[in-house]
Image (tube, rainbow, N blue to C red; front, side):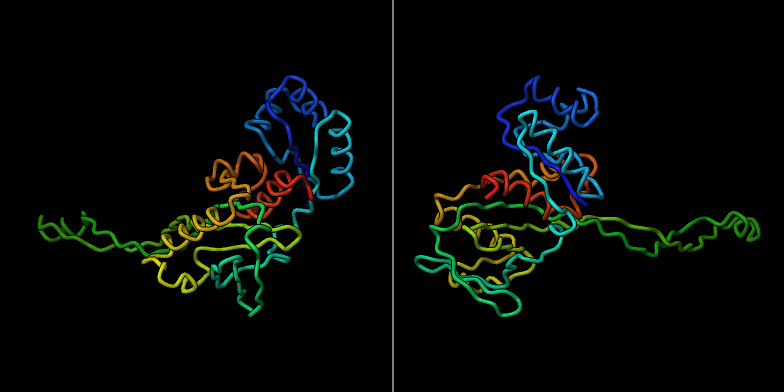
Length: 254
């Protein structure tokens, strides 16, 4: 699937809304909902690349900056460095992946930090036992209340939320830190009592050690993810896409 996103507008304007509505073939009201905030925002998706290229061309002709991405490729974690263990050193951060790859990233090369929340819906079948008064058995017993147990299967849904941090440094592959996917022993004496506290410490230290890095937390909330991805894309399965769109926009599509 190929998605078209718009970016780099400073504020909503009548010209921007009119141009977007005309290019997408939607009402001005619908177009205004897609430019809420200061972008970027996914405005359309297509199964084939050509319609996406055509739309991007129309938007560019109207003076609207666009990004064109292959959502299927971005959704996977291919090309990312997924951290299993990390360690803060004097001038750089040492990171290790689950397959044993190791590298070091100088703090002054880190230019973007994007904290996010991965939200995954979980559905499972549970057996629920209820105690109910049996009218028929009560009558047969001469009015003595008879309580019976009734079991039934019930679908129970819940959400699992995990904090994730995406780190960008020059031309290096994006680095992903996941709250539940790492060990924190590299913190040494600074190690806290819970994963949540350790992850918060990781984020705080990176911000302190990398003062020149842009920090954008709009994808921490589900609402922020929905605003960026638009109404047609599920944040649960498109977090990597949302991050990629935001990163390209903030880094000037480098």
